[in-house]
Length: 152
Image (tube, rainbow, N blue to C red; front, side, top):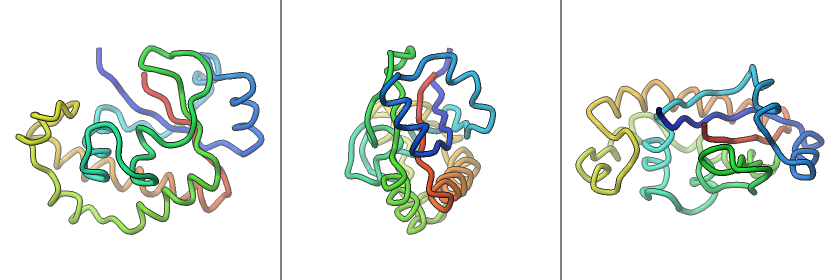
């Protein structure tokens, strides 16, 4: 079984409800318009931050941005990024290019840091998923929405 990261755009009202009531499998089942980063999430986080799990915000928003809500979904609880946090993440992603991120790939170093699924396909994964991430987060920010992020 693999670890996958997904995100869904949500209004501030929806985010407030999730913060109050939590997030469970039923909420995630209705996430039809979610962005699926599959197993590329950790490589993306690494090239954005240079770190395995942490890093400065907003660069580290994928793994440590926002606040946790709800129950443990198997790989921890979901997190919500406010519209303001989403805008900051979008602005940061706008300063990044695929070419600059590819230069940060170092498979032996990533493997020594236990970056999930760091292998010879990392460049292909980055080139496939980074534009999707950038577009999705930028779209959410332009709409004044926040993000629900979860691992499954």
